[in-house]
Image 1 (tube, rainbow, N blue to C red):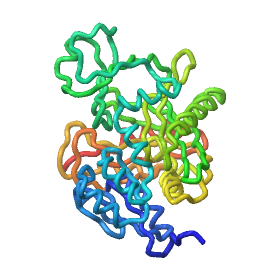
Image 2: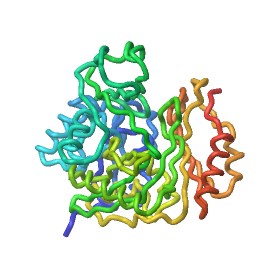
Image 3: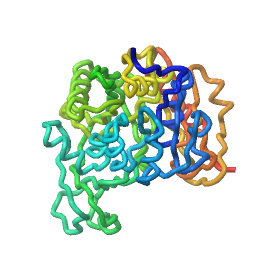
Length: 380
């Protein structure tokens, strides 16, 4: 008989208490699974939803070791974690999903890009540097990426001229060809401990031109079936190469020539899958829990067309948050806001998202733009 997971002493540990952890707790509450969460701030979004909250730095070796030794299975909601501690916990017999090996490959973008090259996975041409080369002969424009620590558009810059190289951090980085793409796509792959694998439908992503953050996620992507099948096949190729457990969000470029290139991946629930809460049979957060607990995977089919709108802090506001226009969007059909529980807003900080559903995906996209223009995340 398997270990009792529900209404028992079993504990799932989550490293990181941000909005992804908070939304993961929707499922653990629904199924009465015990949860411990660790984050460095006690006002983290996941604080209210877990059974036990630990205040600690997930980059601190001792803190992660102490936390991990108190749970049955350990998972993450962010990659920037002390990976050595995870490896040592695995060596002690603690189940960690995704594994330290997978996290070590993914969290450093230079290692991640090299992994694609070594495994025959299509990706943009790149070179790895220990620090920026200010006298590069590479043709402009190209993309600079920090190897470590980048997230939500940070650690990425378009280099259009020699002057753009001047203020880059002196650390390991990537110079990458700038792709003339038609669309940015994503596929989420779910894989449990037993090796069962499923993919979600291909989504289309539209980015903010300045912040380099996703503004809209559209499901299904407005592409033909052949392109969708190709995107899902490449995402499966990436998943099988990593042999991860949990979710793997695979971000892709569709080039103007019809090629699919892997941009980067995230081994956890992802912004490109938030639409699944209202738009899919099984949402991505429940699916991640199913994966790490080695439960049968849920149906990944969409139930309706869905568009996700990111709610980010207004670029001119910092301070105690106000969601101006909430009453107005709540009057719209098929609109569901999710507020993450962050008391302080700042420019471009992710504060929530809104899902818009409609049988007609183009109607949903149009209403999503109305939502974007109506609700504003400002300070008091």
